[in-house]
Image 1 (cartoon, rainbow, N blue to C red):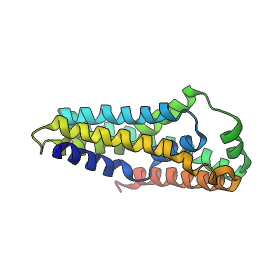
Image 2 (image 1 turned 180 degrees about the vertical axis):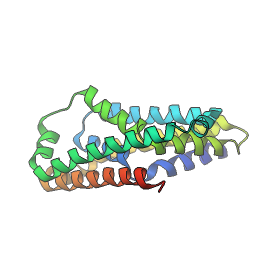
Image 3 (image 1 turned 30 degrees about the vertical axis):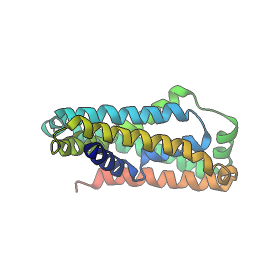
Length: 200
């Protein structure tokens, strides 16, 4: 149990910070659209990467130098574009509230955005494949450590997605959606800038 808790603590620490993926899950939770599917997709994606890292595939990231630039530039371009979409919604105002109350994006489109925010983020590979993978070698039972990290991911995403509904009364006002869209836009752009200029 001590090893499981260690994996849980480290896994939770790595995903707790506000990022593009977390902001998207929060927004879907507030809109109460495809919450289960989005939370499950994020958690399963993490589980796949954590399992790969614990199994010893972290060396792929280190030995294939072309992987990091591809995901860095691809992720940055997507984040800039997605940030622009949120900034436009914040500027227009009523559009975000109307979308939250009266309309629904297709499941395929919503899943596509979710998968892009997850798999185009190079930091997720560093956190799961490299960091969690390398730390797991310090424990005799790597499987228990990985299980703890996977459980942390499931607990976090489902808590975020379904816990967002408690904020719903606050987001009954258009101004609240405009503020959220603005914060999401700046979050996306900030992460994109960090990706592009971190190595300089």
